Image (cartoon, rainbow, N blue to C red; front, top):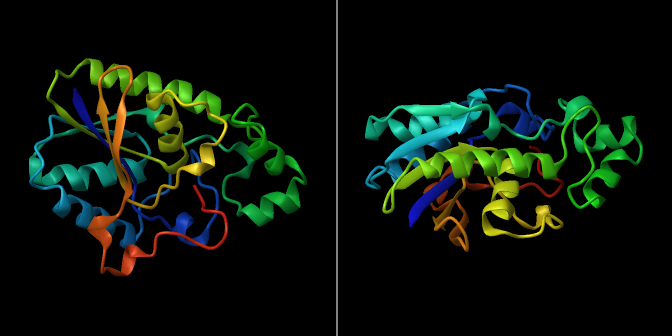
Length: 217
């Protein structure tokens, strides 16, 4: 069994403004770096055998902050990027509804099959990200512990892919900034033991992890 820590990146200005970032390369903001620092402190005594992340700067920087006490380099992969939202990137949910009537509603109702305008579908993200994570873990041995930093929608898709669930209720799994999940990876019949944990943020300014409206990505 390999223990997999799967964490979302820290906050960005796009998250704070609730717009769809997708594949746009947005850096962490000040709060996001503080959040990543709290996660690093929380996990500093965990022995990790590898650190990996999306090649987008917000995920890479989060992984680098967590990896710093362990003095282990972070390997990045494009396949772990956030979903490409195409024309919707840089817009809020309400702006997308106004500019492209009916499209985003159809996207969420499509059970992962419909592509965003000029972008990807959740099914495509699940396929690329799950394949890459399985390749990463194939290079590790039984008993290893691995950390991967990625993105809200991509992690949701990975949870469905790694747990063998049907990608029809992808929005049932919330993922806050720097929240981590733990999966006991056996190759098949994997087990999630921790989901969307923000214990490292309890009592901090950054612990308000959700909005009343749709969470940005």
